[in-house]
Length: 117
Picture 1 (tube, rainbow, N blue to C red):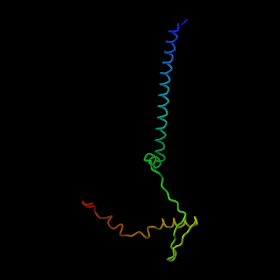
Picture 2 (cartoon, rainbow, N blue to C red):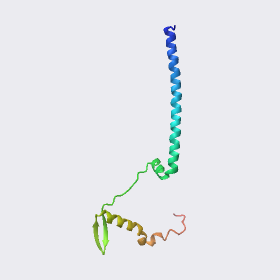
Picture 3 (cartoon, one colour):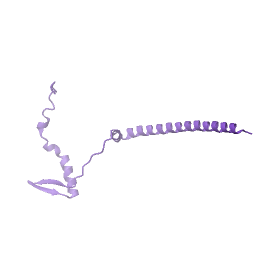
Picture 4 (cartoon, one colour):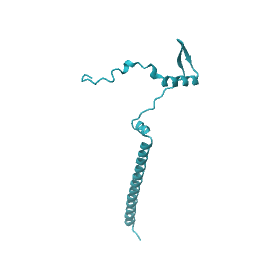
């Protein structure tokens, strides 16, 4: 039969053993989770580069909502609120934007870079 002091020491030893095993299991669990999430992040980077880079840089996706536009028809300005017409006009604008780009904007692009610049 165990005395109270021996029983107390036995409980302390048992507690220490359980604590050590718990810490070891906890470290194994944390290591396993870290490896899982690192692998997941690598897979995300391989599959979705832009999304991962934006997430890392805390970039917010910027967008605009066009619910009305001004259309020029024969020197008259018309306010349009119809979503179908807005979609058509916006698509047309961006597909044909190169027709009205001022050529002077690009004249200096092919010149050599100077020391002053």
